[in-house]
Length: 211
Image (cartoon, rainbow, N blue to C red; front, top):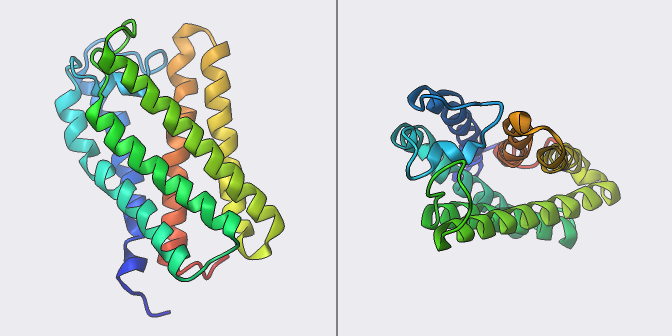
């Protein structure tokens, strides 16, 4: 297969995953007292967090590459008319989620991790989180259903199902596990979307031919 620029842009999804993983793993080194098992990932990038500068550097590729990958996938499936309308709607919703995440968290970062949500900025941060979760769930459900109906996109449907289970486990887990395990459960959710974006990027890199 002769790869065009849009195919190569699929690799940005893998770069986003690597960048995000590095930020999550290494940023606590600049945050004395940070508890990986109990605290949320967003605490590392809070405005008052001592790790914010390191986080910004490590996560810089993620902030750009995640949006580029999801948008490129959406453009490709639209131009090539890949899958059914339901499949394409799922891809469009996932791309929209990445835009909302990138813009929303950039405009309304958490003021101070681990503190009570009280200010307008913190409330908007939580509103962005709610929008990201709803868009993620809607997109994954569309892709799972499309994968069940269409053999040609069944592979992506399976990846979407894995991401959905991880996201669900994280959402439920944060509500039922003891507080000192909150961080573990929360990481299931945050890595589900980033990992799924990387999977879509690899499908784009291969021109959706390996489905």
